[in-house]
Image 1 (spheres, helix red, strand yellow):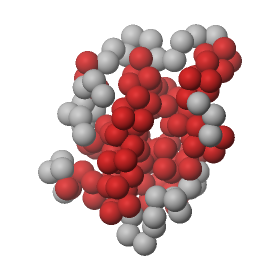
Image 2: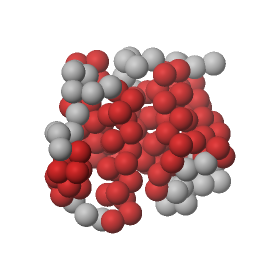
Image 3: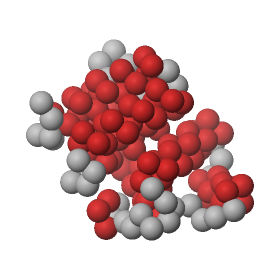
Length: 144
């Protein structure tokens, strides 16, 4: 994935882009439809192109998914990647990808992921995502 800092936000906020990326990755996960079809439908429904940052997150997750899932398996003690609900899986993949970059800061990447999990899953999902991403940040030397 191109460095997140290099992706321009002129076509929407990063928060909106994260939300779009998570929702599209979730749809792909549960439907099995090709991402190109999902993005095309999203763009028709939204009447505008998918933001560049969202596209970068989706492409990054696709490119890095085996590594991201291996890391999630290791961090989610007692949970295999298959047992993690699809929304949380999408949020965690995007969150881990952002933790690999210097922009946004780790605290922002974690807070945004937790907010998405709470909004689209449950408060408990927010705590689960926080725990996993905080542990991932610590392994990267980016957290307490």
